[in-house]
Length: 438
Image 1 (cartoon, rainbow, N blue to C red):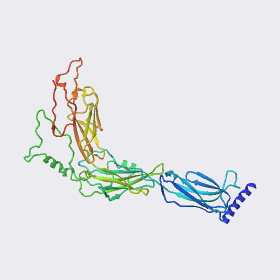
Image 2 (image 1 turned 135 degrees about the horizontal axis):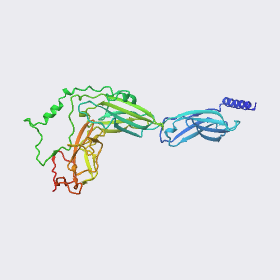
Image 3 (image 1 turned 60 degrees about the horizontal axis):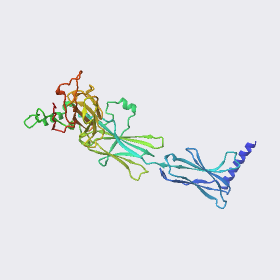
Image 4 (image 1 turned 45 degrees about the vertical axis):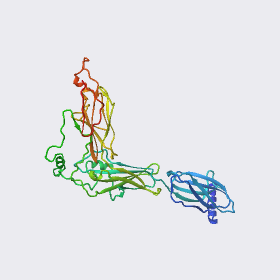
C-alpha cells in the first residue's frame, strides 16, 4: 500500500506541474559542426524557484552531465549550457536535457519532470586521398586490348564525400556501373571484367610488325644495323616498345565509374571510386588524371594527381662495385629517367643462357647472384621493366675479378683469369671493349 501511495503521489505531482506550466524544456538547434570545433548546447526551461536537478544525457553512450541548481522564483526562465570542447566523430548523436525533482522520489531515483532532445551532427572532412592502379604490376600487351582501372580512396570523411575524376583538367563523363563482388570477380577471371571492352582484331590482319620490320631496312633493302668489329659489341641500353596494333582506337574511350562505401569503426566512411576504360598506350601515355573529393566540411575540393607513364631508362646499381669470385652480387633498379605510373613489372634474364640458379628468368626489382664463379665474367644480364603503357630493356655486364683454382690448387688457364673495371650499364649504341689481362 505504501508503494502505491508513493507512486500515486508522484503522478499527482507531475500532473500539478503540467497544469501550472513549469515543465517546458527546449534545446536550441545547431547546424552541423566540424570535428575540432567547440560546441555549446543550450537547454532552456522554466522553474518555480525550488531545488532542481538538470541532467544532460548523451543517448548513444548513456553518459550523464549532472547539475544541481537552486533557482530564484523571480526569474522563471533559465538555460543550462553544455560545452563540448574539440568535438569528435564519437560525439555525434542525440542529446537529452532532463529537468528533475529530487524529492519525493524513491532512493536513487529522480522524478523527470520534463525533457527535450537534440541531435548533434558532427562532420569530418576526409584526411587522406590516394590513387592507385588496380591489378598492378602488369605486363605490356602489344596485341590484346587491356582494361585499365584507377582506384581513388578517400579516408576519414563523415558523411561520405563525393568523388570524381578529371583528365587533363577536364571532368570525365562516365557511365555508372556496379562493381562486381569478390565471388563474381573470381568466376569471371580472364574475361574483360567490365562491359564496353573493345573487340580485338585478328593477328593475321595486323600489319604493324611488317611495317616495323620494313622500317629497319635502308632504301636499298639492306639491313640498317651497323657492322660490328671483332672487338666491338653494340648493346642497346633502352628499347621502348612502341608497336601498336590497329585495334587501338583514336576516338574518346568510354569510361565506366563505380564506387563503394565502407563504414569504419570510428564512425567515418571509406569511399573507393573506380574508373575503368580500355587503355590506349598511344593516347594515354603522359595523360594527367586527377581525383577530386568534395565534402560539406571543406571550403574547396581535395585533389591528388597522377600521370600515366611508361618506364624509360632504368638505372641499375651493382653491389659490390668490384665483384670477386665467390661474392654475392646484387643488381638493383635504382630508378628511371622519368616518373613511372603504374609501378612496373621487372623481369631479369641472362643474354645467351640461363641465370645462375638455372632458371630462365626472375621477377623482382633486384637480381641476386650468389657466390659468382669466374665463368660468369663478361656475362650480360637484361632487365625488362614494363607496365600496361610500355616496355623498356636495359643491359648490364658482370665483370668478375680474381682467379679460380683447380682441385689441387693449380691455376686455371689464363683465359679464365680476366681483370677489368667495375660493371657498368652499357649506353645505347656504344661500343664495349672487354680486355683480357694476361
